[in-house]
Length: 412
Image 1: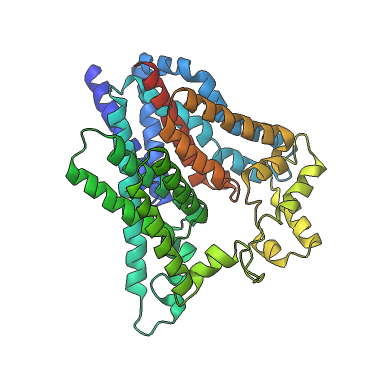
Image 2: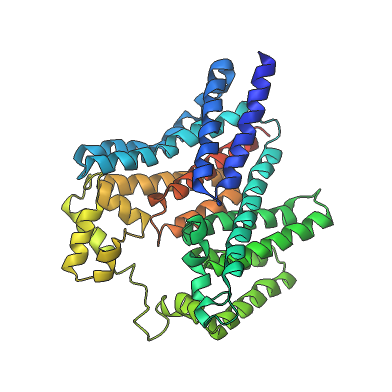
């Protein structure tokens, strides 16, 4: 029996690592790996009672993450479209299941730092494979006489065009790339036993992923990394290294200004409202009024977990916002998304849970996870991160790993 448990535990870990590896690559494969991981974990609950018993110490924390799923259950009560509400409920089941099964590693892990390295290197290698696939697709499709838009780093070879071969939305992929880059530099600066060869390799991979991040134009992630690099280098007094982000910014500005397709100028300058060209100005903040008006129709419990988009589209129509109406745009802000669907209760839970975990990680000195969670929360200002499964998956994995890290810290 012990031999079977040992083999299943190894299979469970490998399936989880494969799930993390495929997270930025392809969602269908990714879902199969995580589904298999959960099935094996479930079997182990029956074969090894200690594994399931170990979850008792995490029950409140699991409930905190799972509250987003519980919120959807109550949201079915006044759902506009019950079938659509069920789909949302199924999608958010990840908030509850992932923490349960990931935290069951507690009894299996002897050295958390080694396990953490495996998990994040899996994410790093998955991100590298994603970049290679996307760039290879672009290179293969390049033509000698292409117009500026079709050149390398042109607008038809950047952003969502670059990632469409894998059906990935750049802001979500940006979260994974930031996690990979921050982890690589954490290894370089804080791992004592790392060799110089490994340092150079990590830095090279980080630069590779940073260029890819720039190419997919995940603006929130880019700005977060720039800010983080300056704060970190100034706080740790690494004055000479300040030249690195400065030079990176200069090179980026040169590309933004001089690239013939003007794609980056539009995305990084015009769309952010820093020019007088209103044609390309990003209107996502002004469009929050539509979600706010939906919220006001039922401010306490919201309009339910059904198709809130129907009511939001009515608001777009009233404001004659044809683009938003045609594309059926969501709130592009996770707080407003919860306010519209679940009212003050939903908005309160969203704010309360995230403040709780920020405080929890801070008390347990898990600064790496605070940085990654902060990046997610900043992304929620301009994206409805939990609208897509990838956003929910990454959030659930991140919080679960943070809890395991805090638990390991408490035992020291």
